[in-house]
Length: 256
Image 1: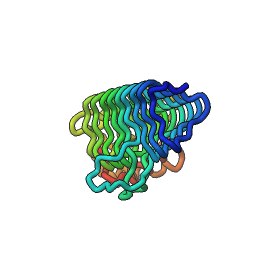
Image 2: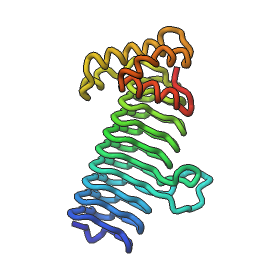
Image 3: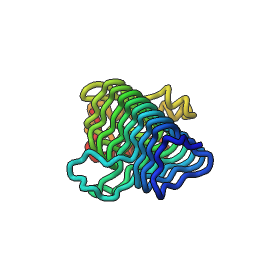
Image 4: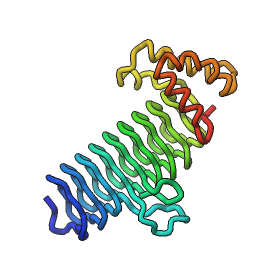
């Protein structure tokens, strides 16, 4: 179902059962998968590739050119997976040639009203951006992470899987997996134990994650000293290995 007031440029590819509401604009180079819903007054520009079952609410701007001043109208891309929800006035920009040229969003994510995903971001799956949360350019967000309302992530930061960023926080360094962070600038505040339990982590795994967190943050050790102490446990438990691997490869260093 396509409303007669919607504008669909030549070359757009639409899957089966796609609904496009009044006064929406779909630009050339856009591909939209089956069962997607585009409400009224939505703008989607390409090259943008959208999977199936996504829902875009009114006034979303998806696949627009980025705000990086180095951008010179290169044909960069946006890739979106399946079953994501983009609420009112979300903005998502395509990539830049200074990175890999593509912004990537996984599946089953919720982007609440007025959220922003900048150029070259890589967003995993099952992620929540609460109202007005924003990720600057080149940010990576792991699966199941939650960004609280009004939070802001500095460019090039990595947010680990299952982490929780409190509302109003400003993140300027990487946040390891499982960690709760809050403040401006954000500091660690324990682990997201309730979230881990809801996602099926065993009580034993949660206990080991808590112990790893204490080793890193509560024993007065340097990061390298903490990683040395956690090495044996990381070889035994994949949950701890994910924790230590992230820290070893944190491009901006971790919050402390």
